[in-house]
Image 1 (cartoon, each protein chain N blue to C red):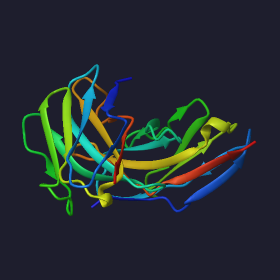
Image 2: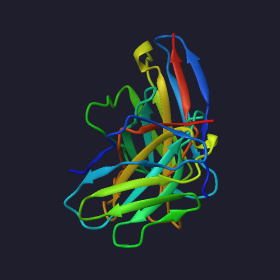
Image 3: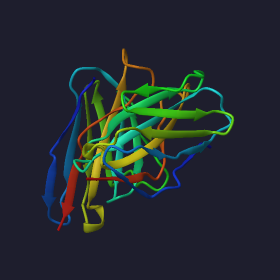
Image 4: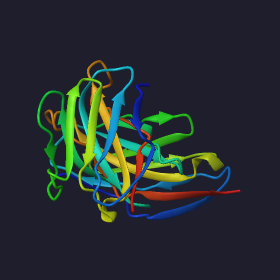
Amino acid sequence: AQTVTQSQPEMSVQEAETVTLSCTYDTSESNYYLFWYKQPPSRQMILVIRQEAYKQQNATENRFSVNFQKAAKSFSLKISDSQLGDTAMYFCAFILYYGGATNKLIFGTGTLLAVQP
Amino acid sequence: GAVVSQHPSRVICKSGTSVKIECRSLDFQATTMFWYRQFPKKSLMLMATSNEGSKATYEQGVEKDKFLINHASLTLSTLTVTSAHPEDSSFYICSARGEGLVHNEQFFGPGTRLTVL
């Protein structure tokens, strides 16, 4: 069975600074996707970034980038130039590449990030 | 990106009544829909997975007779909380994935806050 672990329940960062959120996962499979989702106070889940396991290059989306270490089963999210709008709960998630009709996202417990002015 | 809507966004009901929540994919055909429950500052807990035209697959510990899920068309799934009680009060989120979209990517609805008095 797959598991996702986020060891930082809460984090705080000053506006314009950089922060890194940690995520580790466990699986015996080699083909999968990893995601970071953001859930702001509105509670709408928003996809921040996606990484395919077969790609060695780390994904980036503007101020968001990941450090994907497949052998270590680590998938951290770096937020550069933090903005007040980045304040949210961040969830790391895993899904098998091929998992059938009921293939499902496995979520971590989340990290609550507060960006301070 | 693909859009998923939920209705209602908030509902308050009396104990013992049934409540129906709708989840619609607005611009794609949702072959698979998921229903989650979320408590404050907690992660999403998957309740069930439904594929269009077939019975939902419930997660362990989720009462099938209490949480009725129907996925009658490729754009609509419904969750009915039967004989609701105060302990059913929670935030319910649906998500969907479908043909023609990025492989394994799920799109989330804005959620429904259920309060049972």
